[in-house]
Every structure is written in C-alpha cells, then in structure tokens.
Length: 164
Image (tube, rainbow, N blue to C red; front, side, top):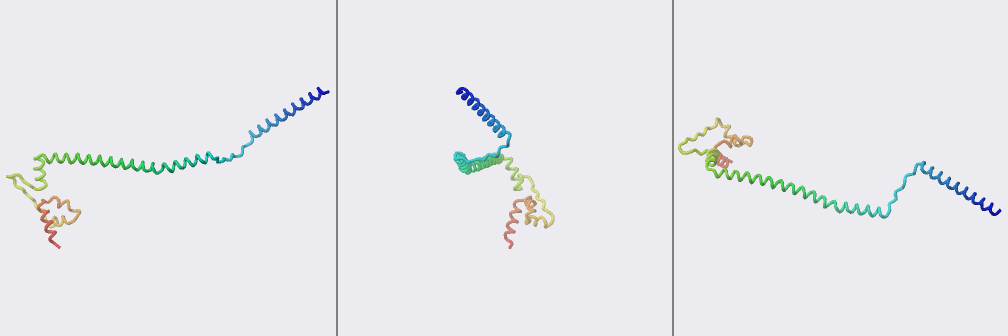
C-alpha cells in the first residue's frame, strides 16, 4: 500500500505540474496577444547626469563656435580687401609706367591743360549764350563745365568766390 501511495502521489504531483505548466503557457499567450500598456520612462541617475553633461557641453561650446564663425567671415573680408588692394596697386603701377612715357605726358598735357606744340595754333570755341556760364553752378550740369579749359574754370572759381 505504501507503493500505491507513492505512485499516487507522484501521478498527482505530475498532474499538478502539468496543470501549472499549461496555466503558465496560457498566461504567456494571453500577455502576448493583449496590447501592452505604454511603458513609463523613468529618468535614472545616469540618464540625468548624461543630460546634464550634454547640456553643459552645448552651452560651453556655443560661444567659441560663434566666435570661430565670426572670425572666419572677418578673415574672408580681409582677404577680399587684400585682393582689391593688390589690384589697385597693379593699376597704379601701370599708370606710373604710363606717366614715365614722354608721349603720354604730352598727350595728357594737350587734353587736360590745352597745351599746343610750338608752331601749332590752339583754338577754343566759345559756347553760345549765357546758359553755358550758369551750367557750372548746377550740380547736374557740372559735366559741361569740366569740358571747359582749366584756366577758365579757375577764373570762374575766383569770380564766384568774390561774389556774396
């Protein structure tokens, strides 16, 4: 009878274990099929420290980065100005070389100062009317006054300075 009792208890125990295993499988399947509630995200200490370090890095690097960008734009402006200055120097060197040529100097003297070569006769054709004399006073007509000889422009300036 003792053997029946052990056998009965083992079979009972196996049946109970089978029922427990079936219940676990059923619970696992029902959990898998049922929608999960949204998981709450907890802020851990490590995550808080990491967020603090990232924020401090962003704040610490913002000003130097802005300064770097500003300095790069200033460097670009300085380079552009240096190139313009180099171009202007080249133009001035060319002009200086032209002024070293006697033929160019003679040409400029003839055009600007109304000089004539020995043996030539210079003619100045006066403008008709008083409108040409008044044209030098108005800013929009100063181009017409610039076509007049330099000595006439000089005396006109002296005359204007003498009038109240």
